[in-house]
Length: 349
Ligand SMILES: [Zn+2]
Image 1: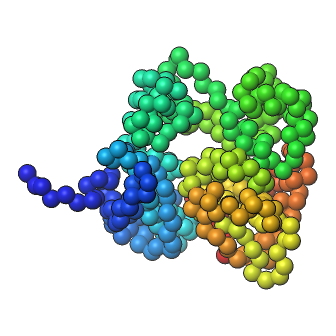
Image 2: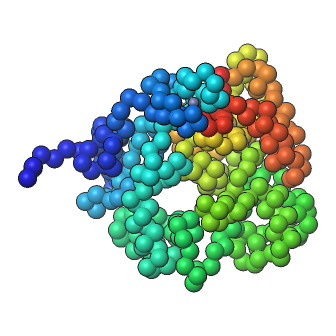
Image 3: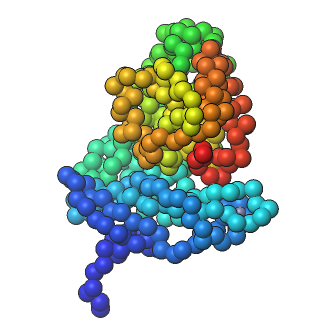
């Protein structure tokens, strides 16, 4: 029997552990996938042309009583096939680390069984003792995604809706009016104190761009949106949802020439293969200075053509006019730039 121990033995097969650091009660392992090539998800052709890299953060099984966070160096490749419509794609890691996942497959498996055995809140408390970084909401989501026993009620629609309302450009009373309900009905529904009847719920979920997701087995915010950074917790939660746990490289857009908007900063949320969402951050406010911490994998400032910048500013202005204009204007915006984000993360230049 071999007694040689290598750090790479700790991480999922096919990955190389590059560096291990301990911060407080957490172990961070920087890793990358072995191999110089990846196959394009659209045409299947192997590419070895790496365009850029970003870092995905995912939770993994605990180690010696410490939480484990994996920092996965992920490469963006260029597809060289002449007729392939996908120019850039991020490498994929299969079931070990599915796209958009914020946990490794092996941790997700464990969490699922814990939730099935104990149910939401008791499982969440036990998970704390086991140093598994999951909340009650997460446990419910995992159950819905991976199969739902009949005894557990499926609806936690309110959590994302509450955060969305907090980031929506228009005040809650305008959102309620546009959905044909009272402000109180909206507040009670989004804090899970009361439900809404079928048609009001339908109108509200359409307005907020929340859709039933078969794969997730629950409601998720789909966007695309213009959001305003007001509350740290809300903007962080919505970003996590839209980006599948931080699988994006959000950047602030500034014009390569000419003046930037004097009132707002514009941050593009460019999750992989997902229509873009834009976060408007008021200049000079404390929350704006915190965005680089709140939006995981934040990439900083990106200079863009004056034409794109103008389009962003005018689209946001139109999207803010009424609650219903938001998704409509952003959907049109996403269509205009569809080739930039389909099957890759949009990096404007
Ligand atoms: Zn291709």
